[in-house]
Structures are given as structure tokens and as C-alpha cells.
Amino acid sequence: MLNIEYKAELRERDLARGVCRTLGAVFQGKFEQTDVFVRVDEGRLKRRECPGEPTHWIWYKRSDQLGVRESQWTKLDEQQVDVRFPGLDRRPWKRVVKRRELWTLENIRIHLDEVLGIGSFLEFEGVVAQGVDAQETRLKVEHLVAEFRPLLGEPIASSYEALVEPLTTV
Image 1: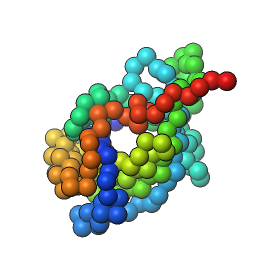
Image 2: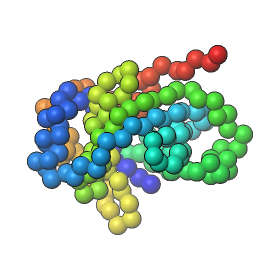
Image 3: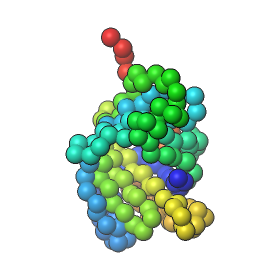
């Protein structure tokens, strides 16, 4: 699956909620998520845990660049992980714990994230599904960046995984 994404520090969460409402975004809920990363040769692989939901894996590949960018991703179950990554060392490498507030606006997911130990962030994920134009989605994400710009701090080029310390083994 293809996403068009943007991530930045978030300075004003309450004002961001107001912008979401003004733009007509729909509040989907608040979630606690823990992403446990393991090392793979290409891209990133994380096991997502969310209370009340089945645990699943997400593999994704995205360049670490500032600004609006593309991401390729796939949701996997345990068996698919075994097939795609035979002999995978599943020892956790990094752990990202976050409280996520999810809003949607058409095919754009708006995340207001509080990430344990590193801060508050806003992330746009424009989902490019079948019948959805990637360039149109990019323009929507760029428009949202402009709408939220006064509430944003520095843009983030990497994933949250790159911002947290590696886990220590005992």
C-alpha cells in the first residue's frame, strides 16, 4: 500500500483539534499503541500492540527526508512474517509507546501523537488505495501542512523509532 506522509513536532494540541474540526475532519478515537521494532535488512518492521485489538506486524519502507514523502507499507500476520523474513531474529530492538488521537479527512489520516520520552507530533498519512490518485493525495497533504503550519515545530524526517534509544538486553 502507498501512503503520502508528513510528520512534524506539534506545539498546540488543543488548537490542532480545532483546526481538524474547522476543516471537517472526523474524530475516530484515542488509542494507546506500542510499536516494538525488530531489525530487518530493508525497511522497518514493527509489531503493533493496541489494547482491545489483535496484535499485528507492519513492514514499511520510507526515505528519511524532510517534507511530504511516500511510504510503502504492508500489514502482516505472524505466518506472513515467517514467510517474508525467514529466520528473523525477533528480539526487540526499539520500543515506541504513544497515545494517538486519530482524525480522518477523506483519505487522509491525521494523527495527534504523544510519544513517551520524545514529545508531541502531528502526522498526516494520505492513503493511496485503489481508485485514489497519488498526486491528488500529495496536494491534499501539502494543503494540510499549510493549514496546520502555525501549530507545528520542526519537521521530522525519520520515524519515531529513530528518535528513541535502543533497548538494552539483560
